[in-house]
Amino acid sequence: MDPRAPAVERAHFEGVASRRPELYWADRTAAGRRRRQIRAGLIARVAAPGGAGTMLEIGCGNAEYTEPLSRHTGATVVAIDIVPAVLARVRPSVAANVRLTCADIERLPFATGSFDAVVGNAVLHHLRLDRALPELLRVLRPGGRLCFAEPNMLNPQVFLERNVGFIGRMLDNSPGETAFVRWSLRRRLATLGLADVEIRPFDFLYPLTPARLVPIVERAGRLLERTPGLREIAGSLLVSARKA
Image (cartoon, rainbow, N blue to C red; front, side, top):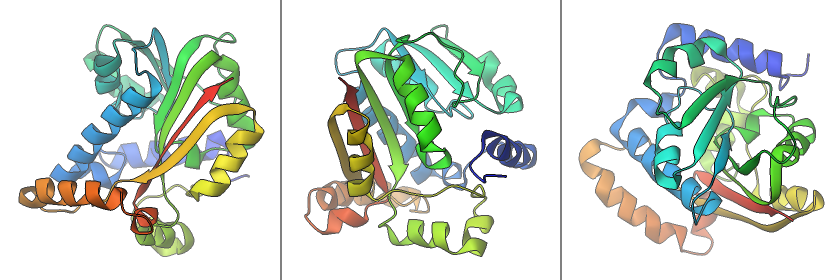
């Protein structure tokens, strides 16, 4: 079976969820939680600079991003994931303007043009993009925006995780997940007819940074993100585009 098939991803994350509350190792630390705050703010500002009426969040997992996205944008957020057990344990705590739905990204149960924005954190690299991207564009209204934070293949740790099997398994990576090089991903999105495609490296705040050093590393990271050459090895890519 294709290692990026929805059934494989579902089985993997069901196993992770049965072993611990966090789905990703980086969510367990103070630096990891600060990274989450930064990412949610970036995604919200890029996807809905003037606010959004309806937003689809794909691969929401434990809904750590769902609440800040709804708060930053004022949008009605429909947050989907493929693992029912994960959604069940977070459903009681979500805000009134959030709706959780179990759904397969390759066959979304929404009408064409339903959403003003489609967003996600660290989810595109799990997907069969040739099947998932057309569905995401189908449910996005004309003029609506896409925004995702994704792993950068040029980052040394990300490269090792995705290319050395035992390292990826130690970190609970799913069998088919990969990472992106920003120039090739930009070309791929442009071939779909998307406008204003922009992909920029960001994120030098390593999840294992001691809590007392987080503010210092965060400030240094912002400088590195503006430094040509060095910025290319940042941990993540901020991906944005508009449906023409």
